Amino acid sequence: MYGRDPWGGPLEIHTADSATDDDRSRNLQDFDRAAMSRSLDETQQSWLLGPTEQKKKKYVDLGCIIVSRKIFKWTVGCIIAAALLAGFITMIVKLVPRHKHHNPPPDNYTLALRKALMFFNAQKSGKLPKHNNVSWRGNSCLQDGKSDDSTMFKNLVGGYYDAGDAIKFNFPQSFALTMLSWSVIEYSAKYEAAGELAHVKDTIKWGTDYLLKTFNSSADTIDRIAAQVGKGDTTGGATDPNDHYCWVRPEDIDYARPVTECHGCSDLAAEMAAALASASIVFKDNKAYSQKLVHGARTLFKFSRDQRGRYSVGNEAENFYNSTGYWDEFIWGAAWLYYATGNSSYLQLATTPGIAKHAGAFWGGPDYGVLSWDNKLTGAQVLLSRMRLFLSPGYPYEEILRTFHNQTSIIMCSYLPIFTSFNRTKGGLIQLNHGRPQPLQYVVNAAFLATLFSDYLAAADTPGWYCGPNFYSTDVLRKFAETQIDYILGKNPRKMSYVVGFGNHYPKHVHHRGASIPKNKVKYNCKGGWKYRDSSKANPNTIVGAMVAGPDKHDGFRDVRSNYNYTEPTLAGNAGLVAALVALSGDRDVGIDKNTLFSAVPPMFPTPPPPPAPWKP
Image (cartoon, rainbow, N blue to C red; front, side, top):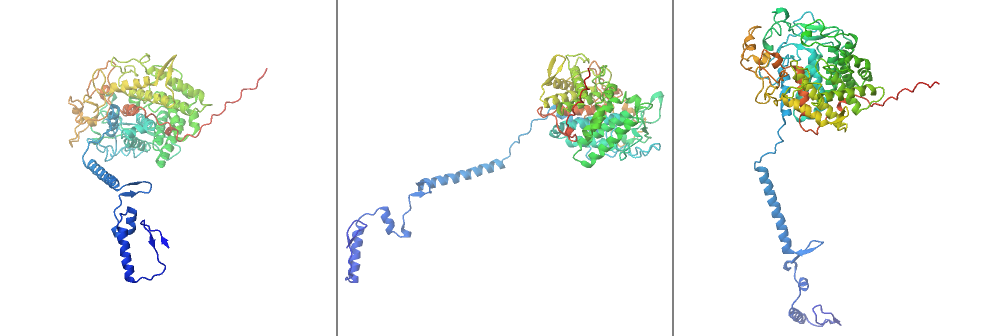
């Protein structure tokens, strides 16, 4: 039998093993020599070589492909080297100091906003918080209420001094708080972007905490309100020490501070109700406090409706903050209470045509369209136009809401330079008070309403509005607001900023007791501070953010401490300034908050109108 020789030669296999061991060994050696005489290929060598003698493969099998071992090693090495290099570069980038990319610098409106809010810190009465940040102010008037035996209100500590004196007038103070709350509700995102949201909320709460002390806020029915703390009557040559006759720091007041109560004060009570109701929306996330504010607002508004009368009749407020009527406060307070509670009875009252007629909604007059601490009609009309734009409640509110909306449009037209409802100075300042002193407080309110209404239209996807047959873009309204605020911030013939601390040229002789007396640990008596009142030197303390009363109708301004018609700041004026500044500040694409104001309002399903009367032939 012959088998196949795997190396190419014949191999004879003997069936009988007759050879000796030596013969077999010799034969095998012969076979080995014969076999090795030929060259073997790689496969054949692998059959003969043991595990330790195998040659290294030239290729690497990766499963899906076979690559050269050299290429494989080179590729793996490059990957490892690249990874090490990338890690090294990353480490260098992280360790080497680099310049940070800063956000763009804030605009002038944002810078002025931060300063304008500081004015309220300087006006705080009572025990000041540690973070008040006005170095020349301290605790003051800690006996308010206690020092007057004639009043039932024994704790009236806190709140804000009205202006350059130390009187606490609740009427303009409440209006200021309402304006601040309104601006927060509409522009909370802008306040947050400016880093001032917590600050403005603290400012509002300081005021509302005080207002809750000025009446029995836990009761459902009240019969009186504390309308004023302090006294300023100097008529007839009176020389009794009081907050106008004396020129002393609030911290040094040691004379009696009487409390003025009122028992029929619809305007004051409704304005206070508006302040608490609007603030309840600001603090809606603090449920307990918000409900406390709502309850107080309800109580005050009920009192305002039950006990009719003007708060300023027969007392000295008539000389300082005289109210010309309370019908506008009825609409204003009812509107805010509706937004705060969702109770339709308040909306029905706010849209009652008879009340609107008494408030002057259907006729003009020289001061029509001017929002102020005295007349809130324009603000109420804008506030209720918002409802028509976004909620469209329909019948039975549509007719009066359409009227308010139309009147708001006419008022916005009156602000534009093309119309002559109001004169302007040569420098461009609108004369909303027709040339009378202290114009800026009215200007800032108009700037706020104009910007707000333009943002309402933008949020409603409406590009503008009609003034008669002509259509005007919302940009025109915003431009009006910008020109007025720019004038106040220094773009005027005098190149003077009327906001203290903003810019390089601003009033240095502000009519303000605390700012004009140095903090030198000397306690001056009532007349002892007169030398600082009458001094020609600049105030030793800068009352940052105070907007002074403003220039005259010829763009003239006298930086004189004794002339309050030029140099005195007020709570109401600064509140309007803050509102206008935040509305104009920051990114223009960030508009109003459409929903927060309606957070307590239930879904509105318009009631169908009543059927027509039966037809008769």
